Length: 127
Image 1 (cartoon, one colour):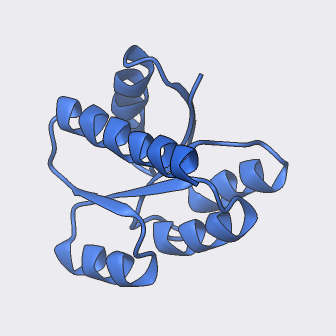
Image 2 (cartoon, one colour):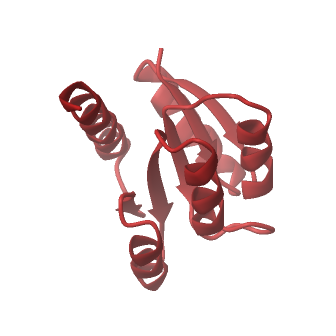
């Protein structure tokens, strides 16, 4: 099963995204802040995808992604944000990450997650 670490500080959005991803067949660990997500990574849990909001208290999604990429280099990273200026910063800081701007339809989220994960499978098989 594919494991996704979801960091989203908005309770309703986090529950909404978790349900959609679980219905699509993914195993989701959802947390409300970047520091909690990092704790999961540092404890040795392995994930296929980090799906994180960019703007969060304590540790933003960009800082989280940088830490996670160092600790688990094979993890795929996907940002979700409602702020276009922030998405430009994220793209420059973590260039291999996919950025999905809010608002989005759940089918678009699931489609983008599948696409990001399939790119990993292709690159792993190719090299």
